[in-house]
Length: 93
Image (cartoon, rainbow, N blue to C red; front, side, top):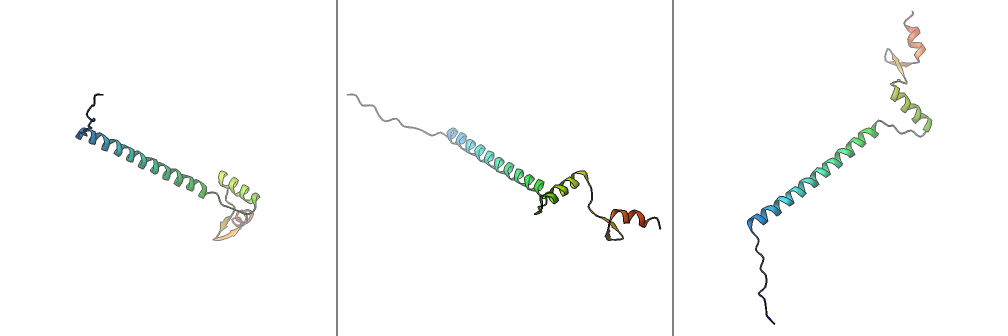
């Protein structure tokens, strides 16, 4: 039987350059993915920050509705809390 000499592999500088370029692209893509995940988590946290927790579901619903339509739950007169009708009658004196 004839014997063949073993195959030798040679790594050229071009092979190394393409390998390093590929690894750099993979690392950059991983960094971009991680950044996108952090941004999404931050935006989600910011969206949830406006929702205030309350033990009473009716209070939560009412508060969410008032925030959506821009209604303030208290009006102030001279720095103190007052009902809405007191604010309008105080100006008539």
